[in-house]
Length: 465
Ligand code: UDP
Ligand code: UDP
Image 1: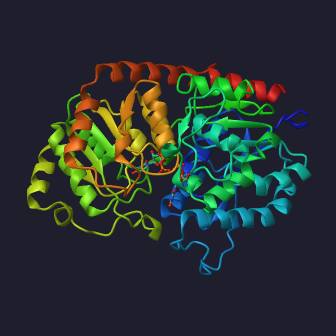
Image 2 (image 1 turned 180 degrees about the horizontal axis):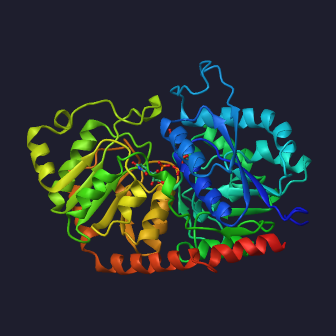
Image 3 (image 1 turned 135 degrees about the vertical axis):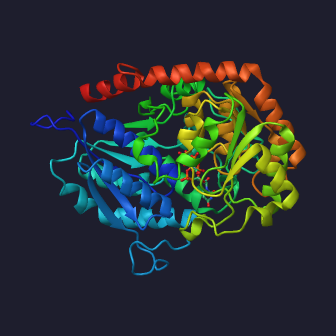
């Protein structure tokens, strides 16, 4: 089968699921395709889960007017008539609605596209609803796995595991280090979560896709990539294509608000600032936010802290104005202002990580954050909160450019004290070997992404097929 039509056009349709953690990598991969003269059609479920997603999509489409944009409506009685309204709806319930809606909407939509599609890129949260459709159209289907290769190993192996994981001590998969149950996403250990249902339904379908793009690269996860591609995880594994790091794009900057922290960083000494940011849906209670601020002050480092206190799922990513003083108290606020900058809104994280004043990253270990830190050579102290984040933190630890503390638990399990956070940041900011390893990782990341680097080689191989 050739992927190129008679007029030499390669045309891909891409369908991301909900959440910034899915949308961002899809748009970055789309940008890579566009820069290699591939025609892109982007299909997006509406309404989006958050305002950030719909704004990011608008900026993407303004930057790339040549991309065909197709929306399909997510069917749920939980949404009002307005297709743009952002209703509070639990994350995995939204995922479930998207799966059902996609299965209904996609078939007529895909066959009507012109020029005809060369291949399709599915989200791993939608595989079993999309695969029968692409199969019936004989359309090559590639999976974009938006998490790590380590998490992919677990995902692809999942349907072979016993139905209850809670009795196991660790999940053992050939070729990769055992994964302690305490590091497996709690939703996969719980008996009846939607996340687990999605995993079980989709995991067994992985062998039917034509290939899997992962936002990772050889130097970041060498052992796991070797294991998956050598058939150790599944004997019939399709080619797993480490296609990262996905690089941040111009259109991701929003308005002018990204400028403020960068201006502040311009005045700080090189490598002196610890950046603390916890992704798009970590909602700490005020008591935990106070401990974080206290820990940052105790660390003695300068810091840039981003706090989000729980309004994300109202579709309004800018938190309601609760003053910093009200959360932290006068005394702590004064200390914080002395050494740090606190932002209560969306920041342009990849821009911040690329600033030379940043010396370390206290991160929730969302996979995109990890790859962005790798791209910029910034050491990480991981504070995983949920989902795959403990496994991601372990990837960083294994490759030697950061660490994490297993005793901090999942979000809300216990209050992590300012003392502990302060000590962690001291470890992070003073460890020379983290810095050396991080710059090696950065070098490898840049090499893979360069002209003629691993990503281009992979793309060319794909089209030769
Ligand atoms: N992000 C950002 N500004 C913020 C919070 C997050 O730019 O204030 C971006 C971040 O750079 C990353 C994505 O949002 O690209 C979050 O993805 P990740 O996988 O790290 O975490 P998630 O939010 O999905 O848990
Ligand atoms: N997640 C969760 N509860 C939520 C929202 C997200 O547990 O309310 C976790 C979940 O583990 C899932 C992941 O976040 O795997 C998906 O979030 P996202 O789409 O932003 O991507 P990721 O965090 O994997 O980068």
